[in-house]
Image (cartoon, rainbow, N blue to C red; front, side):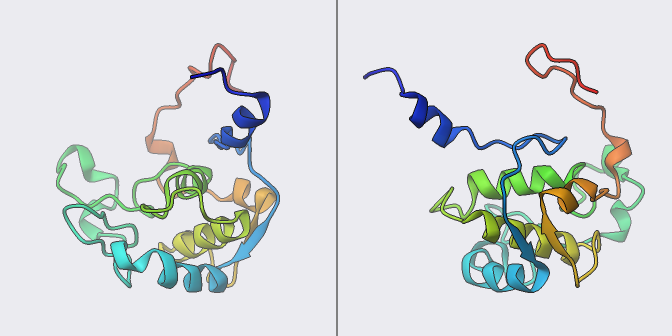
Length: 160
């Protein structure tokens, strides 16, 4: 082995924080995201995002039994982007780094913004007419964001 070069480290340093730190340039609409979803995501998560248990979880849907954040009372409730995730930027980060499963990191920034827009709209978090970029994504308020405790362990940095 050898030490990674600065360029190699920079190429892999693509994480996005809950506060939006690290969001790249780009944009994408819900309609564009739906097309990307059908092409690159539906084979695992299903055409309507209901998942294919046990390997591929549901990512779209708002189970009425889970409304009110009832997960502590019933851990078997389905957790989807719309009823569980605390930050829209985390959706972007996860899709960008880990999806699609067999080609993680292969999506362009515009495809990731588009997919994020589609997933948020399909979960009734943003309008179906939305287009996302770094500024608008940071403005998205997830339905249950206040049910989570903020992690303030950012490498010794104080979170504001």
